[in-house]
Image (cartoon, rainbow, N blue to C red):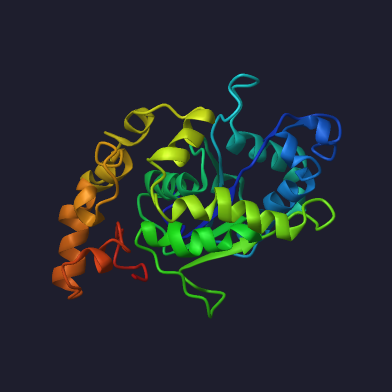
Length: 291
């Protein structure tokens, strides 16, 4: 089916694996979750509904449930496929949406990969890059996306409009299930606090988290190399942190040294220095709003 009319990428970040069952996700027993996620499965269902609602309101939308096989010791099912199964088991929660515009993304194991891999899936399926991106996730992770993940991909969040080029729809668990104070403290220590020093998740603790969730170095080559993506995109996806030596500004990532540096320095007149250029790692198309 031709999906070239789609311009709006809607990403639902997955956090667990729905296994199926008679209650169609209402019972926590039908989910694979970690101990700290107890009581949160209704929130994951709310994330699914939020993504479907966005698609229902936009005929040019393209919904991606993003999440890989993070629990391979217990199931081969991916988070993305399981969320799609949840939607199907519940008759798409009665939303009037085209099934052809709902896809799973089955490789991402962290929030940065949720955005990047969904973006590339959109490109491979539709033949173009999206003009708008909406991310459904937890509200307490909003700053992580707005201040780090979007800028790491050359996307500038616009805070003043519901039609911004990139935006976050945040839904937290109820306060009685997961108090906000604790969520924010955990995000500072183990979330945004780590991404500040490692925007691509290739070093130290973030790389270790990926491995724990089933990511194996080199997997990206089998998924995104030689499938029709631009060469600079392949370089960005495959960048491993300059051999572990750190970020190093635009010089650290080969995908930046040509494409991005040319656009930023020559076409937009930004100075050729680390402080300005490192904020924009990759610019996908002129239809985006740039940092």
